[in-house]
Image (cartoon, rainbow, N blue to C red):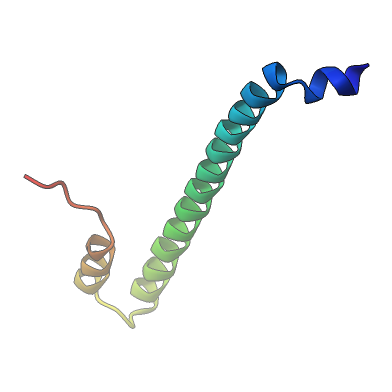
Amino acid sequence: MVANQLLDEDFMIPALIAASILLGLLIKTVASVIRATSRERTRREIAAYIAEGSMSPEQGERLLRAGEKRESV
């Protein structure tokens, strides 16, 4: 009974569309979290290099700016 209702076209197509949208949002969210985590790790590593003296603050600033997205005019 329930299986027949679930396999019905009137239910199946909207359910697949909703599941696809949710999956896309989940993938986008996970990718965003991974990107933010790696960006923060990079910032910490650059700060550590500056603190130990193997990199100047200007070099660190240049490296951090190199990864930023620039707005197009």
